[in-house]
Length: 346
Image (cartoon, rainbow, N blue to C red; front, side, top):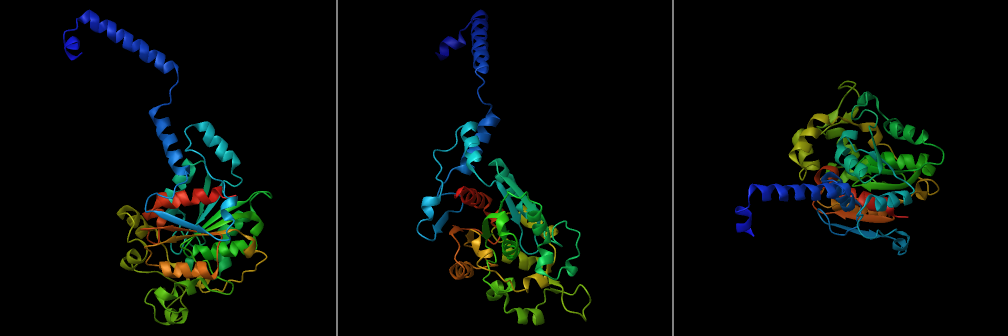
């Protein structure tokens, strides 16, 4: 075959080239998907296909025994747009509201937003008061209701018959819990990501007591306190030094994401995290809760997260191995797949 090709005349070559061109022309008339379309479908398939083995390894458990019977299992991976469209049509709630943790802002969810949008879901990331690019002076945010106002406003402005899935990270879990007590009818599910899933009467700060000490000692002795109204007055917030933050939050995260965090994080308002939450079974207790544990977390240890789950049991628990306190940076694919799977649970 090779020798025949080498000895081919110019006329033969033209004829073969013409035949090949004709074949390619016919092939193009069949409207085969482009390479970009194929890649897009592959990404969607990977994002939406349920699997117990993905980046960092994830395990899960459900409470109540009958939970699995209520879950909607996916069939084969989506191989075409029609299957994807049919799947999305079955989802009752596609809107996901992402709430950041202490010192962060909506910016920290950029990877999660991109992945959820690829999957056809509708994510919204909010800046809490005094966070991200919100213009509120952090030193003037003294109550949890003030800190959570952007989330409460968002829920208030939803159409009457519309619900969202709330995702809260770290101390953002307190804001999510507050919202559950205020507008449970607007919330389809709540996902706590290594978050302060507090019990009734508990302060968000108390969850971090193992790492930071008691609230009283922290207020008296911490070198991280911010006195926004002057040294002679009570502290208004706190902010860790850069090296402290890297060790607590980002020890498994990519360097570029850590650099982004170092120039974007703002002081944490002290009042909201020291405030007790009052949560009722009728409102807070009526919302469906899920918890995502991060198993290489230095800010909120796996033992503490397990304690939170044990004391205030959610409907389901998911675990991400190898994730620091910021899985949206260190294990974005694993976190994404968990969010998509929880969105499917009926």
